[in-house]
Image (cartoon, rainbow, N blue to C red; front, side, top):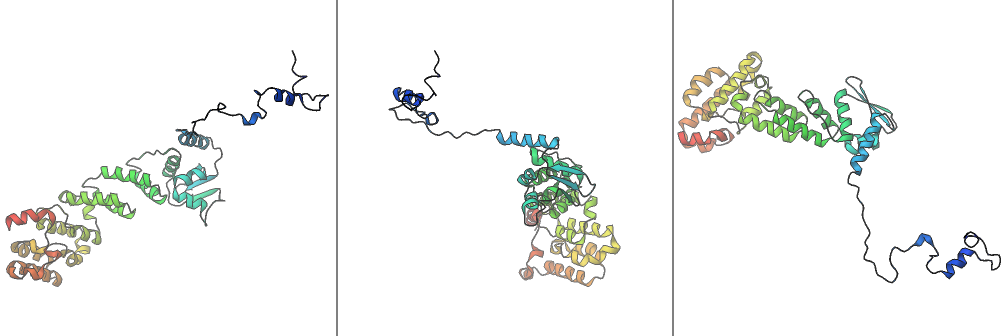
Length: 329
């Protein structure tokens, strides 16, 4: 039986549609199909709205963006490494989401938002490629041959997690032969945690550190700061003076003129009178400032009743020698 004559065709007799007539005679057919009720009539519903969360959505989206990057689609910027001219394509939105450095570059008042190509001065091409890949994947390979340039670049681009990862990598490589260099590098990059770890390692292994080339290559400020630390792990102050002497003898013509400034970093009152006269005095020759320091140290030994007048940093023993001084003293 055909229903076309009754549903959807106008009624010639009444002027009303057959559909309307049928809907009016059959209450089971809703008048407005766009407003269907989800609940049974006459009953109250306890159904709550549902918040749907696709767990892998963000990861999948980044995966798709990476695929577009690999085939060179929808890329809107080309980064050029200043060191070797290597070109790296990318999407500005992805870079900006991963790095405050790129976000400022592309959205700031002085932004490069309209530039298709941007040259990054002093950036290594391989490291730039690795950093861009990290922005898409969250993974990066850290090796001995790239950690220095990678950390420098990560600091510049404000990739804090990469900075932390590189810092951990370097902290695991600390050795008496490289701890001073790592500390200097960390200070230049403002990596406080790595700097503190490298310093602590240097202080703990001081007697091994001074046997390596890095110690002899320290500049005046660096050697002064190191020898002035109360945290140096030494058994006696004689070891500090011997370390100072070895540094000076590495370049005596240039360094001997600084001996008066550096001798103040040695706690001379904790050197025996014999050591002062037999070892220290000949090393400083006729330097008037050094002679004055030696005389003050001698007073510490010869006039114990006046020691309270000379108390200060110079007369405070290093932490590692306190127990020994108490036993001997």
